Length: 285
Ligand code: CAA
Image 1 (spheres, rainbow, N blue to C red):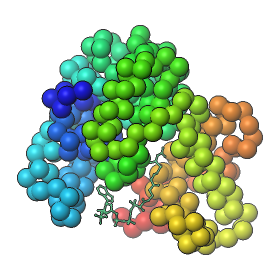
Image 2 (cartoon, rainbow, N blue to C red; image 1 turned 90 degrees about the vertical axis):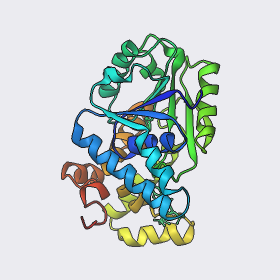
Image 3 (cartoon, rainbow, N blue to C red; image 1 turned 120 degrees about the horizontal axis):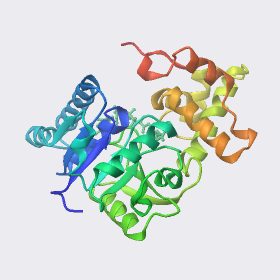
Image 4 (cartoon, rainbow, N blue to C red; image 1 turned 60 degrees about the horizontal axis):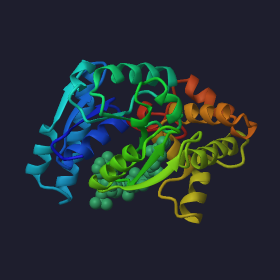
């Protein structure tokens, strides 16, 4: 895929704006789409801040940062995605939302275009069936913060063609990332292994085994994790953690994946972690 080709990104939230950032920084034209202008404004402001931070650290120049930002066109009308050779969907982690988006994108995009999802756990094979191009549907799973984390989990659905896989794998390399090939299964590899760890840490809090601070210290000092599991859960978003646990529970039908009741209660209370100012820890605005 040449750098002249236009890449679409659906969703200007944490993951979507990070994905738009890395494509634009590597010279791609990006069309960033969200349902409301205020979400786009917020996403672009985050990209600007993160590019400025990279410039301040000497990872890019102020001029290149400005040029990268100018490569991103914000739109609210999904029809504007028509010229894209690849669209990466980073919308809400709900199958119904993604299903209708994929069906619509299938109608809008050229037949040869690739539809990728940044889903953290939803089946690529199922998503592909909502389109008439199952061979060109794939998972392209980035990690937060996208400009920093090296991994892209590239997930093959049952019908994903070898050509689609190779194009997306090569594209991840062009972005300076390391692609890792994974087959479609609930939570893929990353969240199948990570989420039960975070969920178990929540059970330990709920049962009074230790405080969130103490649990995080165990993992930072004992296992050299950059963030403890509860800080990480707050960072990912407790609503996202709950959605993923539910996908694992439904997908495997095994009670070992049941979401921690404390997690459910916190999400009900609107304590979603860093983004809402409160989760296992509090975050000043
Ligand atoms: N954009 C650009 N650069 C950024 C950035 C951003 N959004 N966030 C941080 N950085 C840069 C900083 O500028 C800094 O650069 P230097 O090394 O050049 O100084 C570097 O990243 C480290 O940042 P900080 O010094 O501010 O803070 P830190 O050392 O505490 O690191 C962290 C922050 C990178 C987030 C680190 O704590 C970390 O790696 N945490 C674990 C993150 C993780 O596990 N992410 C995956 C979550 S799971 C997921 O995303 C997928 C899913 O499906 C749920």
